[in-house]
Length: 112
Image 1 (cartoon, rainbow, N blue to C red):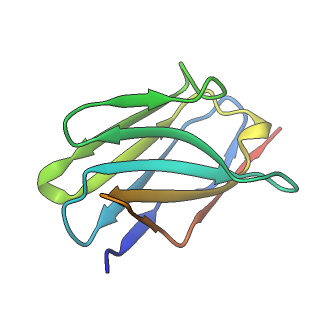
Image 2 (cartoon, rainbow, N blue to C red):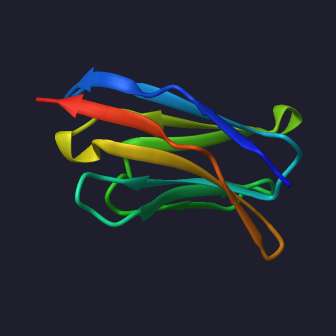
C-alpha cells in the first residue's frame, strides 16, 4: 500500500503564491494533483511522470508548476497568481500500473 503525505496549504491572498508538497512512501511513476472546490466536483489539474511527461489543465496553465524529486519520492506544486476560484482541497494522486493512491487532502483558501 502506497501512502501519500501532503504538506503545505493554508490561507493566502489573491495574487499570492503557495507551495504544496507530497511525499510517497515509495517510488511511483505518476504523481499529480487534483482539487475540489466548495460545491464543485473534484478535478484533475496537473501531473508529472518520473520520465518527465507533464500535463497541465487549462485552468491552472501558466500559474501552477509541478516538479518532483525522484530521489525523495516527492512532488511539489508551486501555485502563483492565486485566484479566489483556486480555493479548495488539494489532493495528491499517485498511480503505479493500474493502481491509484490518494493523499488525505490539504485545504487551500484564497481570500480576495
